[in-house]
Length: 137
Image 1: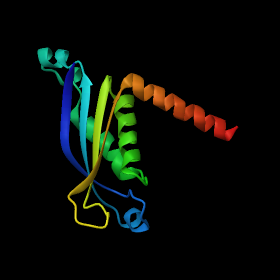
Image 2: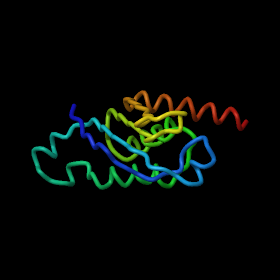
Image 3: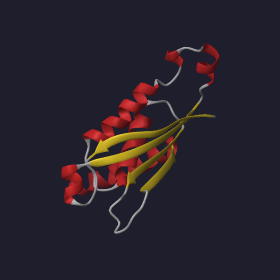
């Protein structure tokens, strides 16, 4: 399989457990790795046979900038979900960084990396949905 890597995306979002983080917002970084068969695009040199990087960027931007979550783990999970929902990929790896995270000391960044196959993601999503359904019943 082939892997498309888009690194160093930067967005302004309102995520964190502190009230000021949600009100003021801050910069977040995102790296994405999408695994699929890119052979057709390589042979044809046609955008319609590839993943349009602008769409990948737009989906990531939408998640980070229009949603608000407590944890970067949740932001990463939402990015996984969007990539699986939008593209015919077999594996997605997402890294979300929170530069200068408020951890009580100087730091470059706190980061989370999630990697799932489509099968793993769908199984986890189904378990999450089943648990949510049980709670409402």
